Structures are given as structure tokens and as C-alpha cells.
Amino acid sequence: MKFIKKSELFELKDFFILWSTQSISQLGSSMTGFALTLWLYEKTGSSLGTAALAICSYAPYVAMSIFAGALTDRFDKKKTMLGCDVFAAICTITVFVLFRTNCLATWHLYVLNGISGLMNTVQQPASEVAMTLVTPKKHYQKTSGLRSVSNSLNSILNPLIATSLYSFTGLNGVIAVDLGSFLVAFTALLFFIRIPESKHGKGEPILVLTKEGLIFLRKNPLIMSLILFMSGVNLVASAFDAALPGYVLPNPKGGSSVLGIVTSCSGIAMIIGSLIVSVLPKPKNRVRVIYLTMLFSLGTENFLLAFSREPVLWCIGQMIGWVLVPVMNANLDVILRTTIPVELQGRVYACRNTLQFFTIPIGLFLGGFMIDQICEPFMMAYGNLPILKTLFGTGKGSGAALMMLILGISGSFICLITGRTLKKYQYSEN
Image 1 (cartoon, one colour):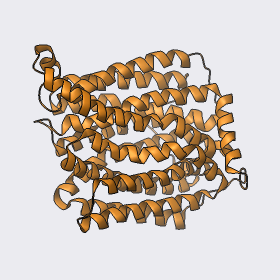
Image 2: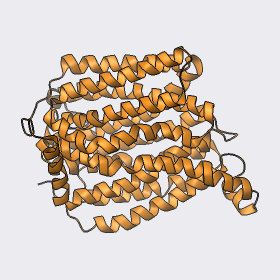
Image 3: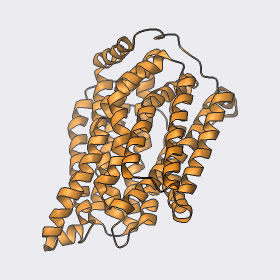
Image 4: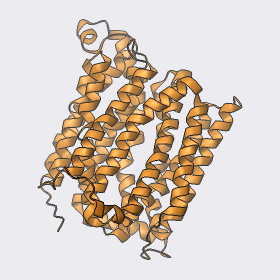
């Protein structure tokens, strides 16, 4: 089974450097985010309170993404990425200083996460375009698989390393590793990577560039439909992310270590899926692959977690639910990169981010709110009924199990309904 030929190494040199070092930096940032979630849940015991960390990151990201792509297309990609990385590092250092001086409060984390989210608003589309510019078109599916591998490794290592470091060194050790990973990525990008630049869009007004991105999406109903479909998927997935800590941490068989293991299982599944998609031949119908893989993922994991009480079954649920996600991502990535002209990708990806990801903060809020204010109180009042006790168990965490059932039904419904719409579109890479 061939993966990367020797003759391809030179062609992909810049991609490998950029991909590997940015992946290391993303791992460090994710570890800090996971550790802060553990720290905040210890302080508040609230699913909504911990979900608010992610909400504060995504809210500015979603609100400003539509303009960020225009900025990306107008300015130098490399300088944009370097500047955003520096701001993100400053936020991490601020958390470290506040923690070391015993001044760290919940509102500090919300504000700093908001600033980091704003920087990521500009950095993410710049990074997407940079990956396109340093990758020959014939390698899009293969490099997409490699990026899925790194994302999967992040999902595996992030909770495991963060939990271990947090247990032994607290936030100090986690943040130190995060800053070290930032230095690696920053140095590599500054000195060892050349990113070609397109002159298209430079000097044009931001609003004009933003409008071009929206016009492109309006004229390409397949891309718009896929984006709206994924926004529905993200709504359910983000609500699941908000529910998972409230499901695992208070469970008698759960806790922070178990949460780290369960979370890492999704990464293991994505590693398997990423390796598979990297060597798969081109499918006959990429659009069909996208909605069927999401139907399988959302229609299995949520139901299994809702009705199970054993950590091993939670892990199996994560594996089943995530193994096909890289397959979906790779096919969606190829459709976007081959359909959107490279000179428009920054502004179109940014518009995509706003439309596809605006449901994430909504889902995080709904997931936390539903558990804290509806599902947990409901199970506290009626959880001793035989049918509810059998299905969802008792005590804190049973409301989160009920929420998992709601998410399983909602996710399956979204995939079945929107899948029918996607069937009518044809896509060709020629």
C-alpha cells in the first residue's frame, strides 16, 4: 500500500513543514483548552459554564469570519498567520500570569478566549489558503488525509497529555508545553516556509471582497447546500461536546481521567479513518459520501452513549461515531478546493465559516442549558420512574444521558431531510 512516494517529497516539502509544525502548535493550544475546561468544571460544576469557554471562542469567530476572508485575500498570508499566532500566545501568557498570581477568574477566561477566537477568525482562512498554495492540486486528497491524521492525533493526545500534566503539574505544565509548541511553529513559519502570494484582491475595499465571496456562494448552490448541511451537523456535534463533560465527570465510573480516555477515542477513530481516506480511490459520488457518513456518525454514537453505563461502551461509541468523519472531511475539502478558485478561497472560506460554524456557539449553549436547566432537573424529579431509570440511570449525569438521546434523534433527522436535497446536485472535478 503506497502512501507518499519519494518523488513527491520534494513537491510537498513546504506542505510537510507547515502542516507538521502547525499541528504541534494546535496540539499545545488544545491541551490548554482542555485543562482550562477541567479547571473550570472543578470550580463551577456547570455544563453551561464550561461550554461558555468554547462559546466565547466561537462567537467572535462566527461574527467576524465573513470579513476575515477579505482581509486574508488582501494581505500577506504568512504575515497574517505570524501576527495572529503572536496574539494567541500573549493570551496564553496572560492566563499563566493570572493563574500564578492567584488572580485567575472565570470572566478572565471568557474574555481571553474571545480575543483568541477573534485572532483565529483571521488566522484560519489564511492557513487554509496557505495549505492550498503550497500543495499541488493532484495531492489535495492525500494531503487532506494527512491533515485529518494530525487532527486525529490532536484529539487522541490532547486530552491524555493534558489530563496527565494537569494532574501532576496543574495549569503550569500544560501552558509551558503550549508556549513551547508555539515557538516551534512560529520559528518554522518565519524562517523555513515560503508561501506564494496572489495579487488578486490586494488593495480592494474589504466590503467589495466580502461581497465577492457571498456572490460566489449564491451562484454555486451545491457549495451553499453543503455548507448549510454541515451547519446542522455542527449544531448537534457542538451540543454533544457541551454534554460530554456533564455526562462523564459526575458519573461514578467517570471522572477527569475517564473523560480524557473517552475523548481520545474519537481521535483514534479519526486516525483510522484518515489513513483509510489517504489511500482510497476517488469515489463516484463525493456528495453522497458526505451525507451518508454523517448519518452513520450522528445516528450511532449519541444513542449508544445515551443508553450505556460503562466507560468501555462510551469509548466504543466514540470510535463508531468518529471513524468516518475524516472520509467526510476529505470529500468536502476536495469539493471546496476544486470548485472555488484559489484567488477567491480566502473570502469564500470565510463566508463558509460564518454560515457553517454559526451553529456551534448555539449548540454549545443549548447543550449546556438543556442539561443544567431542563434535562438534569427533569431526571431529578422523575428519574425514579422505572422506564427512565432503566434507560438513563439515576443521579447527576442522567440528564446528560437524556440529552444524548435527543441529539441522536435530531442528528438523524437533519441528515435524512437534508440528504434528500443534496441528492439532486451533481459534482465533477474535471
